[in-house]
Length: 504
Image (cartoon, rainbow, N blue to C red; front, side):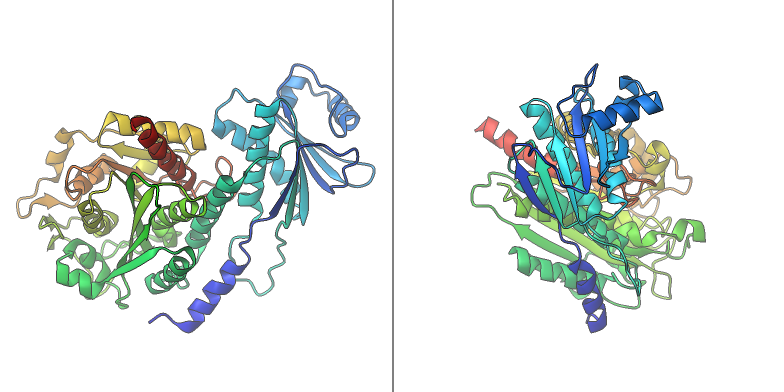
């Protein structure tokens, strides 16, 4: 059972995560009363005079001896005579989404650092430019001004309450849904491990399922042992609390033509097991459940925007602890699909819990299966924290993944998974080794391992979330824990809907 106090703490922590109210107007009023104002201009060779506080900007640029090209690269701010803080930014709409997001996010940060209750946004340019600028600024305001949970006695942070947008008055429902998904992902990921235990996580998911109308099913350890999910159980059995589970959520849309399965690694804390991590590498291991939070965030975004696609979401929730029952090197365990696995390193637990979860997900025969996991250190070595790596079962899926990255601003890099890597996983005592000890190309070997557990030749994308934490923020998001994968996943779902319409 979940401790009642933990549930109370969780509910309190999530109460403040409200998006600011958006008010839009196509026309710019003669007088702007905003105490915090962002003015977004299209890139130009010279400044016009027809925008808010144009003379003030001109004087600031002159005083700083800034040329127009320099202004196009960096936002400029000033305080007006009445004490309002104004930030001007010039957006290059020919640049990729990521670069535009960074530029707008940095401009917004100048305003949001003062924790205003309300901000004004002015979008200028032609209709397409105003639409794009408005979307970048509103989304950036939502994801960066909403308060992530902290447990301080005196929390003096102030949330943004209202956004006034001038120059564009369109529909922001899909963008709002995506923001809510991103924020949910980040909220869950930053929670400390004694707050977000597997049991507490299951309680939070159950509440969400009731609120959103999702079908909710749990495979607890008793059920997993009964069906023979030995790979998952091997990891979970090291925890004194038998609270691990695979949680299955379903979203159905009456007009859906495709079913997409989302799988997320949800290791709520990873000690490394008997192959114990040193302190430096165990720090932030409460974030090892980020893959499950990404999948849950995508599910929420799709639900809120009523995306016409069916979604089966599978969350592998457990902890990797050390103890007398914890699995050990050289153990041989049998996975749900009957494959025997030789344990080589207990800190390769993510691929173990995913193995049985992928089998369950693929047996439902979805049109596409995507899993998300903070899986390997070798991916972080390969890419750093600004891209995540993807593996796809065919080139068309790989191209779709890259396009979704460019569209969403959450960039991905495609890696190979050729068969000639797999002999490294040959075992003398089992069907396959879990990993190798030398660690070479471990992100590729992990994918070859996981592929053994995807049944029915299901089209599959594996996402290794090396960008889940990026110091100083990434793309549209200013916080280190950035929710990478939610916007990308939404773009992938949208491309599935478009693809279905084209085929039809």
